[in-house]
Length: 637
Image (cartoon, rainbow, N blue to C red):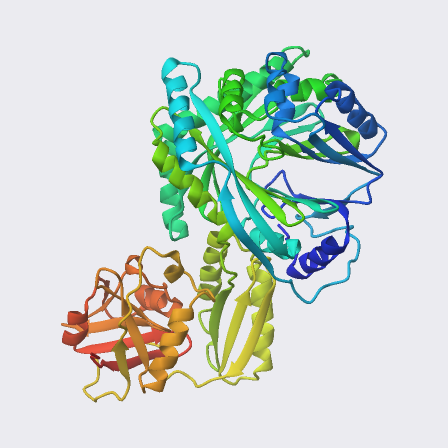
């Protein structure tokens, strides 16, 4: 899949800062079905539904524009759903003031498309910007106190105990003050959240930024697809560990039961709609699929409703939303009773959060997501909804702490970083271990959700190598998240050795290695991937060189040797080489992997300590550019 490049985004952000009205439906994580990002500019009309208006007439007006060939995009607020259910109709007035906006959509003569499969686009050519201005978030506060939250959860648990509900998705809000560039704010959050259904909406001073991974429904032809999400698990440190976590999530009884509960709810919602249609059917296409996001593995299931195209096309938008809205994954089950409980216990209206954001396109295609991780900015004021699903064994104080942690999405965006590979261009061997470097780059790109075209990168590396004209060189590749990359080349010395000796020589080495006083945390994922997020290693290595050392080696939190700042380590004793296993907290170096697989001498992966360093007959450090160098251990106080 192709990605919208950094330069294109820069131009978009610059334009968004100047354009007063637009809707950008942003797919930064694509799949086989969702392959487009859509941009809506220059609205013909703005359709706002305010509490007190006629909801059926409002939806009919939207449909009329769609039939006439217009594109419609925008949002429905969560509370709009109360107006579609007769038994809930009166309750919405408890939260919503007369005239409050519950839906806001724009009508457009057409829309612009970026096709992630081909990279083709009809986006207008925008003037690029040189960078992003700063922004600042202050005065963050929750909409309710901890005591109020705990009291609400105790009432929810009592309702569950009484059999009124099985699960309640209880939400609250973070309020904050904002100043600076909203576009820079969006750019920072987008960089850390690769999602299929992101959006950036602006109407004058109001901006909505949503980073949702969850499809609500996709209606096209004779099909409606829904993909509810329920069930999460923390990611591992590597692709291999992710797979173990993925299997664990799929087989976890608690996560399975919560997922099935919501699947049954949505299947029932679709069933009410489809049983009225000839040949209508509802089928669960898949259960317990696991999707990968930056920090979490997320369980999802897919439900398909099918009917004759001509029959489904006659289903009104009112009937569709009445059957399905809001999505059961953000209410709980059973849906109607749980919505009553939510309305009783939540202090504020949710608004666009957990409602629906999306579009209605010409020819009848309609796509809406479930807006979670959603921020609303009004001038210098902002808010973000947070929440969780409460079940019978939920711990109220633990749920409160998790709500606080979810606020880190807003307050602690991850620092930008790039993936790097440094490759030796050898006069005899060419690009030394090129395929191994590309394989490691590809694995880390998969892990961090970077776009990576290894064929394009390989061609570019070989072209730069040709420019060195048979001189030894060092090529440094830097890969951005959007797939763009840069290659720097400079001449370097030819390594004196690319193989471990059968037996270390008796001559004394002039190269020394020290021990860092700072220990690393082997649970941190950053030690298992080669990225630009290595400030501590860079600083320590500079100090090592200044002190006349070849490198500095580290211990982890358990006192086990890991690696050097720029090298992996091998110890020789009793006729065997030993090197620390990667699980102890070290980068699986390309040269290290090559030696483990192809060396003619025996090598064992084994946890090592400082005592092993002191007792070793010989110590070797290696990387794929400098080769293999023998060192002596210099104990520091």
